[in-house]
Amino acid sequence: MTNKVLFLPGDGIGPDIIAQTERVLRRADESFSLGLEFDEAKVGGAAIDATGVPLPDDTMAKAREADGILLGAVGGPKWDALDMAVRPEKGLLGLRSGLGLFGNLRPAFLYPQLAEASSLKPEVVSGLDILIVRELTGGIYFGEPRGIQTREDGEREGFNTYRYSESEIRRIGRVAFESARQRNKKVCSIDKANVLEVTVLWREVMEELAKDYPDVELSHMYVDNAAMQLVRAPKQFDVIVTGNMFGDILSDEAAMLTGSIGMLPSAALNESKQGMYEPCHGSAPDIAGQDLANPLATILSGAMMLRYSLGYEQAADAIEKAVSDVLDQGLRTPDIHFEGTRKVGTNEMGEAVLAALD
Ligand code: NAI
Ligand code: MG
Image (cartoon, rainbow, N blue to C red; front, top):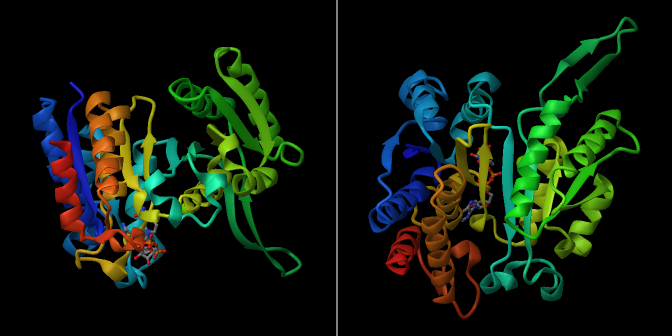
């Protein structure tokens, strides 16, 4: 059975938005008779306050047991003075590397009801629906050797190493091709093969892989051009696949095309489809605990968890439909509020999703 769900609220607005998502998932569990088992543990600042470390052993043990993990957010000024090694963000990195979550899925989807929130012209973004597949546990963020050293001539130099093995490229490529099959059957692989050898190999492996997916169209693009194309004509893309650093930057760029950080979910998967799901935004300490946070990105992350890690497509569809319904009703948390819509708090938004689900 793949039914164990672990909530990791974290800190900041994390507990606010997880509380609403938990209600929604419990309701979906009842309505669709899914038989989910729920548990909760501490991570990030909440864990530091309680135990002194951002990722306690007990949390890691529960995470290993879980099929789907739903994370709120971590980090905030309260812990910023701490040493890098024990900051809240370390808790996240520990979960990602400890569970081998190499496949990061970041959709950039524009709800038609929110078209006014985008900084781009409606004709450029309306109907936008992209999936960015980012490699999350390799590349230049993890390559060895790395460091800052003083050379013999006394000058200091910093260095990182950019490397990907064939198998690392192949497994993230498969995630992209499989995802494209469920969508519009196009994969655009993004690299810098005109300058970086590691991405020459990346391109070759993607071409090899494409032979296994004759129904999916593969194209390639250099990363600098991709950055440009994303604002010029973003609707040309379906699935984008890229390495860790390019994916970090391009996924933030794509997210902003939708104009609403409070709306976008994300997933990080490993080879056994175990996954950690979280909103793209951070812990928003400025609005924590004030009934102001938008819970929809987290609720949508819960839907992604049902779809990708637990295999409950129908329940996932129902939650996504419920979110779209509350937007149709004109309900808006302050981050997505504009004239002619009704401003609501975190709690009321959660309640409205529950009602729409029924
Ligand atoms: P942030 O995403 O937390 O906030 C940026 C702005 O967006 C703020 O004005 C905030 O109020 C607003 N915002 C974010 N989420 C919102 C929501 N659901 N509803 C309404 N408004 C929302 O990014 P920031 O300020 O750079 O970072 C704050 C803290 O979060 C830092 O400690 C940072 O390290 C951490 N962080 C954690 C992440 C995670 O847990 N995955 C990811 C990014 C940042
Ligand atoms: Mg980033």
